Length: 254
Image (cartoon, rainbow, N blue to C red):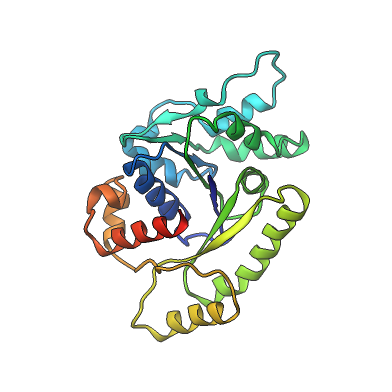
């Protein structure tokens, strides 16, 4: 199963959600791949830590290779690197993705990621694709390659207003490029159950019939430590409340 984690709004926890759900699946024995398509490389740094600064091929090299004609194209697995966590691999990001975007659009390489992940289908049980905060070439490539889309939501009015346009954009990809794509649900992140505004905002989404997933992910300073130590929550603190919420969310998606 291929999951795309997408929201056009930045800072809503896309990388955090993708990496933690991936780490849980890998810890449970699922062969798991994270594809980082955001030039900022937050997922890459989260899973590799300081090793993210070391040389290594990844998504930019894959797309650069896609721009070249080759009688014997390279295997997609050559652009994947191991992480410190068993069963968890990564197609890493770097800033060159930004430079390549215009060329990839003009050459219409929008289906190349799907072809690559099709070729790797026998190697992985789960693929998690982390996307940039924009409906650009890389996000469209991810939605065309994916099977299920997760939408992080951070409980404010700006996010709510953006949500409808986002769902419309996903719907266009479904209609034009990927009929098999489905919206797996909206992941409520940084939820504060004692605050009125988050409760009201989320309940309005539920009342509108939108696919809001449970459990909601709590706001916690522990996630900052997880980022700083480049260690997903399941490895940093398996018994923490937020970790258990991630585990329950992973089970809900199974």
